[in-house]
Image (cartoon, rainbow, N blue to C red):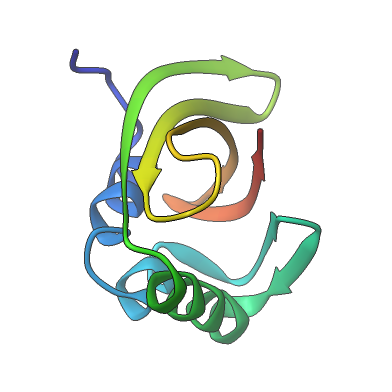
Length: 108
């Protein structure tokens, strides 16, 4: 199933298939990411978060639903890989600013 995603969000999921630097480029300079109880601020910390995650797990992420609620684009994606509990559907709460991601929170 194909879903329509804003360009910055589509770029995030495409970059997630490659490397942490490509993912970090999808964010504003002072963006904030919340994932697994941790908060990462700025492109440097976001890059490190993605590099560490990619080194720890091999996974694919396939977005299958999207909705806009208030200032958030909420994307539900199925992650499948070598991590405990795989596969899992996660919700990604994106807040955009000037065609970049200003905030992302990943929730079960």
